[in-house]
Image 1 (tube, protein in one colour):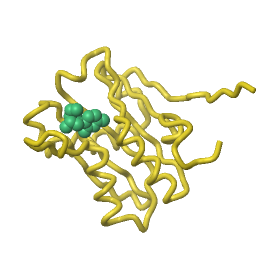
Image 2 (spheres, rainbow, N blue to C red; image 1 turned 180 degrees about the vertical axis):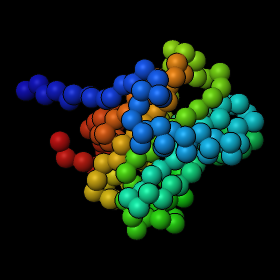
Image 3 (cartoon, rainbow, N blue to C red; image 1 turned 90 degrees about the vertical axis):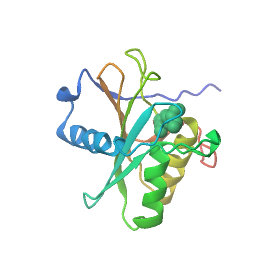
Length: 158
Ligand code: THU
C-alpha cells in the first residue's frame, strides 16, 4: 500500500507581507543574531522562541575552534528554554541568518540535528510550534510544526 505525506507551508514575498506575529518573532531573532559567535563559518544565525506568556527566549550560534563543539542558534535557544522555562509551552520559533552560506537562492531552514531536537520538545509539550524562517531573498516561510520538516520522526507512530 502506498501512503503519502503532504508538506504544507506559508510563503510571503517579503517580511512586510508577513503577519505581525511573524515580523515580531523574526525581529527578535534578528536581535539575538548580534550575539552570535561565528568566527569560523562567518555565518551568523539568530533564533527566538515565543512562549505562551509572550516571553521570548533568544539563541544564536556559538562556535568553537574545535569545530564540532559549536552549537546552532536553534538548539542554543531550545536548550536554554529547556533549562529555564519549560514550565510553559513554545508557540513559535523564528530564525534568521547572514553570511555567504545564505544567498538569494537559499532558504534558511533548520539543520537535521535541530529538527530532531525540535521534534523532542514538541513531544514533551504535546503540541506543535510554528517555525518561521527568513530566506536569503528576503521571503518568509513558515510551517505549523516540525512534523512538516521531519516526517516519520523517530519514536512516533504513523
Ligand atoms: N547554523 C545555525 O545556527 N542554524 C542553522 O539552521 C544552520 C547552521 C550555524 C551552525 C554553524 O555555526 C554555522 O551556522 C554554519 O553552519
